[in-house]
Structures are given as structure tokens and as C-alpha cells.
Image (cartoon, rainbow, N blue to C red):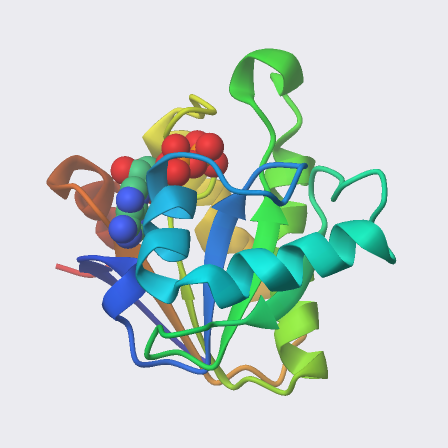
Length: 170
Ligand code: ADP
């Protein structure tokens, strides 16, 4: 598997699937979630509402992942995952690792072979960036998956540097 980090906007990525740092409601929020719904159009929200009305009446649990259409984004699918909030889950890096692992498992089921990830939980959910980068890199490296390309797409330079360092990229 090829793993890389870039600084950029995840809504512009031409990959099979982009991952959304969603919240349990699946009904949209701020940050990367807001950007994905804004750029992807109403089709994504409609698909999320259908999931809430069928398999996910209680919402999506922390560490789980589920796919929808990518609407008007250049990707084919959006994989929604719910990261842990740092304050509520100090020491639960397993939940953050699960987001990456489960997203790759969903990617395999689609099947998607190229996947772009944001830095899940490092925004509103306050996970320290260096710690989150370590968890993300390890989870992806250790995943048993058919995904061939993983691209971490980091919005700001500080987060990009943390991921690039973790991947040994300069
Ligand atoms: P969470 O609630 O999981 O913390 P956020 O969306 O608040 O999710 O933040 C996760 C990360 O996504 C942050 O580093 C934030 O800067 C970043 N981000 C926000 N918008 C985008 C975007 N368009 N593309 C990539 N990353 C983004």
C-alpha cells in the first residue's frame, strides 16, 4: 500500500472514496463534515437520512464507518466515520484507530482502492495532532486491506507536518 500526506482540501480529491469526520447523527456538522456536504450537494445528506431511517436509527457509533454516494464530489463514495472526542475518551486511541480500520474495511466492501482521509478528531473533537497522526499512521499501516492508496489530506500546515513526520515524509 502507498501511504502519503498532502496539505489540501479533501473535497477536491479524485480518489475512489473520501472519508468524512462525521458525528453520530450523520446529519451534518461543521469542519470537514460541513465542507463535504456543501461541496457534495444534497444527495449525500439524503443518503445519510436514509441510513438513519433504516440500519442506523440510533446513529453511527464512535469508531464505526459507513459509505454513501459522494454526490457532486470528484470521488465516488464518502465513507462517514465518527471519531472519539478527546476529553471523553482520553486513552482510547483504540477508538480513533478503529475509525481508520473500519473505513478501510468499508472501502474494501465497495470496493474502493484509493482512499483520502482527513485528520479525524483533531478539530472540534480536540485530539492532539501529534498523537492523532501516530494513531492514524499505525492503524493504516497495520490494516489488512485491498486498498492500494491512502492519502492523508490535511487542511493546515501544522497538521500536515505532523502526519508527514509520522510517515517519514519530507
Ligand atoms: P472532528 O469533529 O472529528 O474533530 P473536524 O472537521 O472538526 O472533525 O476536524 C478534523 C480535521 O479536518 C481538522 O484538522 C480540520 O482542520 C480539518 N478540515 C476541515 N475542513 C477540511 C477540508 N475541507 N479538507 C480536509 N480537512 C479539513
